[in-house]
Length: 195
Ligand code: ADP
Picture (spheres, rainbow, N blue to C red):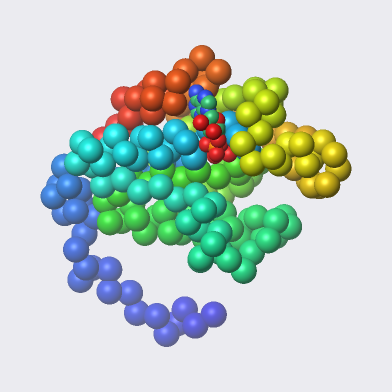
């Protein structure tokens, strides 16, 4: 660690409050958690599009754009999952400083993992959205064929099958996708945002 040789210049940079005023809305981290196939990425993408069309600076972070680049050197061990989450949280925090609404779509199965994100970005900027879809429905959808693999024993430690998912106890928003279309879920999310 070379922290003693780092000289912050934050005070010289354009401030978050200035950016938020210019953008016309506040920044925040919308943390979408839920089982694989619950609809996190689909709803995040739909919400990003709707927000963008309303002139909101919105950005999705998900496994596709993070694990391929920044976190391309990480696997799925507990240690690597924690490091993956830490880096995503730090990137999300930078985006919030830029005034963005960051839609983060990650299974993040444990409460401790999600708390670590809240600790990094700060409670005031952390909005936990539970994409609440029963396992049976996620398994029927099986978008990526991963549940079939996990049931066949070809994929170990798969969340919901042989690795636990801890549902949020008090989420900012609970989206029950079994009762909503993607469009409705995205609308609910946008309406709830304190922008
Ligand atoms: P995750 O990111 O949680 O792993 P995905 O968004 O990749 O999940 O996949 C969810 C799948 O479920 C998509 O194919 C989506 O079209 C489908 N789906 C069907 N109904 C809904 C709904 N009401 N909300 C979200 N996704 C839905």
